[in-house]
Image: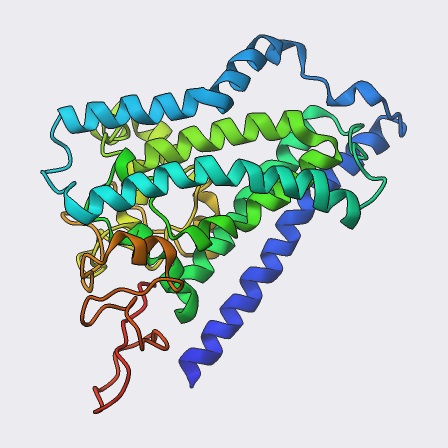
Length: 353
């Protein structure tokens, strides 16, 4: 009982802190205009001169560059043998389907939301925030998008029912480009932050959103990669100060690989935290982070049954036929702790939180 009360107290505290963080960009923009004698210009949304040269590159990276980057990095990983021959059978199917389906379907969903739904929900507000300076829009979207995803991710680990929608991402027994997009489609389609960012884009912050999206994508791509780019920062003493800042500010391979470990009992794995996507600082603020500068020996979930690709991708629409699977017919809930097995009781799986 005391544990539940403490958990609720911590959740209330963290949500209160989050609400304060959400207001910081708004307060910063307000103070900027107060100090500027309330001068508002339609041209504020224009890029700063020193970033103009980067706009074409960011636009190309957004449209096709990220996909090419993923494929090239994936080829390098396979060539280097970083998957230990684990990319077989159902693993290959679920990774490929999860990679292709969102790229074919999500753009249409977001376009419908932006062009049909938003004009009805918030009529006459298109480009209403176009007066916001670029830095303000960037700050606003970076915080709103990534902090919202932090909570979306965290709740899918801590709420038993939600865990199975996110379980697919953690079932991969390897890290790398192959499993980056590996998600249950319902988890992906309800990504809360993509609709928030689409709304802010509709309100006139499309340019800052472009830069945030590209930077965030690169950080999350490299954090999932099996190529540990952060190891030199831990190896060479002269780079330790940079490492200290990096690993607390953004997600790195070491901190995010720990989140995908199949155990938290070795002092390295930490699937109970390290929820940050672009920014790791959320985990630092809320006490859910673990920094060890080490990499787990194995990944995935102990209860993985190598479920069929369609069950992992479209549960609960399609159920697994694997006996004992958390995605099988008859599984009603996922408890936070192991409970004694009772005859005729539905199969249960411990939530990975």
